[in-house]
Image 1 (cartoon, rainbow, N blue to C red):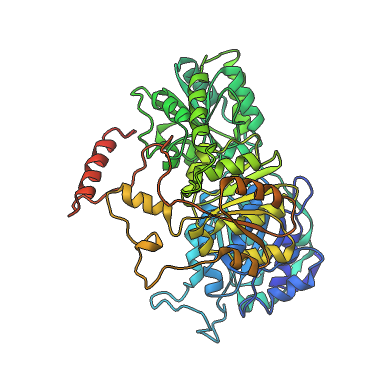
Image 2: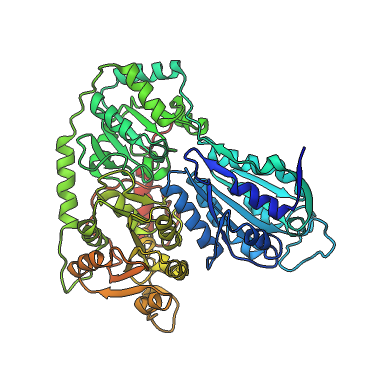
Length: 609
């Protein structure tokens, strides 16, 4: 057996660079890195030495780098991914939130946090925590619950098993998620004789498991018996490249389709079987139909509470659930009829089993009613004497967008309004991180999206609260010549949670700047701030001006930030459903007691299976 003597860090970089996807592209496109004493000496040297094999990108914040990597993988349908490395201590733990985001959203990212000395001779080193009860625990153990695969490397030869396991996890649709290789900093620099075969090119092909024929037959029988079936399309439809198969299935068998946040765009908005978003932030068309559905078939969804209206959305006493899902954990939820397998393979098998069966659903009237409601709030031009709503902002963005535009968002009020109101014309025109609803994802995520799809017109929707949490990757995007449009809606605080607070019967408190403990109101010049980081920025004062600026921003080679003041208070209430946010059982406030009584009445009708 031929061997080559390398440090653990050098071996890791060479192995990672040799992993390919089914198209022959490197599965790991590049490595995001912020160096510190835990990774600069060894891993930094290895990345420099092998810079002709794999790119290294330098970000401003470890969490931001991870968000960019995650958005990159999501935008490319999990077919490619990125790695992120950070130094020991806060550099590494800054990535934990992003790891959780990737885990919830079932997205691949290779995390390489540096760790303490395996040899323990200089302990405690700078930034090392010391649990009094367990000498084997480090700060990086925080990655365990938020990683699909976790390993700590205390010997160089452990990479021989750890790295293949990490890639197997990231490329398998049933286990896909973040893989964390926590590598001790002294081990990074330690040399070992690695077999040359460890660095041979390997192609990772995503499995497409076919479902069991008996499971398909049982679901087909349930569909023939159903009087009002409904499909709920999740992100798995996109990752399986099953959008066309879903559209054909819906047309052939007359079954309407609702979409989760991750599934949105699987059906073009004008398709006669498309009901739009479902649940807490769903359309009236979806929610009205779902309330009476007697068979709900989830395809590639995990039935999150926003999708199900905290399990109060469905009201038919004869309701049954079914799940077409590659993950058994999801397929069996709520005593569903399970069809365990790839989404596209499952749809095609179910279609063959149904033959010429047609459910005969006619949803034209509820679709027409819903889109008339959408037009009533998105087409409004705005009043010069009133601050515009998020709904009006969405309308302006929709009118300015092209077939090459993709709108993206993550947290706050805007995601809910986008799921209700945005009209996707094809798969890939909508990118939402709402599994973890992580504030701060938006700007870094837009950068990762643009890296993945340089031909796309990326439009990032972000509120002032989320912008303030993590904005530093604007500087990275400007440095890298990545142009995307940022629509920054400034409602002077956390408007979304302020509304939720009021809806729960509490007074406005500690969300909007005007209701916080302060000496004076913040005067934040978002235009000046964005320009200081290298972006082009402008503030607009009307919906018409916003539309024009979005069109002007298209095609630039640096971030384009457009700021508009918006109202923090609820716009016209259309669509939506119950969401389980529990008001206090005892309170001095009559408004809170009223909210609790209303809540108690609502949960009586929750689906309990």
